[in-house]
Length: 358
Image (tube, rainbow, N blue to C red; front, side, top):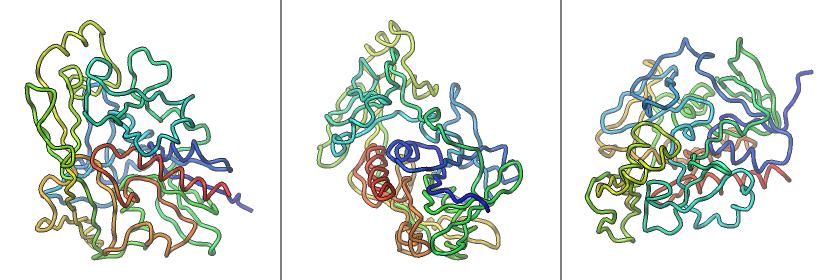
């Protein structure tokens, strides 16, 4: 008889890492590799972060995305966005959870001299590799001990307690589990739910995001009221790191020298929310943006969340399909504050782990 896993986690980004960290019972992590699905369509408009020092990857899938006002992304790579992100975390509402990471992550208060970044929000910290001398940003890709490579194509139900997974490895294989945890990005989640019959033809998918703008100035502080937005600012050294895809500080002398230049790049996360709305076209294998109600530049912050299918949140939709399927990635976050979203991924993963550990 085929082995039935207690828990299978799909994905290997930050949310999968957090659950992997908190989960005490038996589990298996399945993470994708683009070579396994090289026959799928390559979607250049969903491929971001291709910078000089960044690891290269492609967005692959069976559905094309026709986007007008929005910018969506598909980081189809082991470790997910932690291969490219700034590692900023708002520790304000997760202080009680930081102790769990003390041997894995070093939380450092952001500052121009230390990280090349700044905010007047006192709770913004950068997650760094433990004992790093050059402020290396935390990357979770090496943190998974029990993982295999495979791409989840479809989920089915054997009965109310057993979930069947069709996974593309060197050939298609079947996995069985009691609990399935989805830690995949929005693009891959939509495709999985279509293939599994949970999202139907003509269904409407919507996402929320805090309004986001960028600005350059000669001043470290912008005159924006705290109750209106969260501002994350980068010095010239910080700008160079992000532009080249560096996840650590470069030469200390040059880093400090560039910081003396009075020039700053500001990311502004407003409290106001905007929406991205899309329709599934199964016959033509397209996801069509409904541009007349999708906000201009939706998705630019990359912190979109609260995915809904025909106005029902995606978590409820999946629970209706089977109560033993859990979502822990950003599409499943219902409410978020402006700015970093990693703290919500930590909190969500911790809460799911408590249920699974019982």
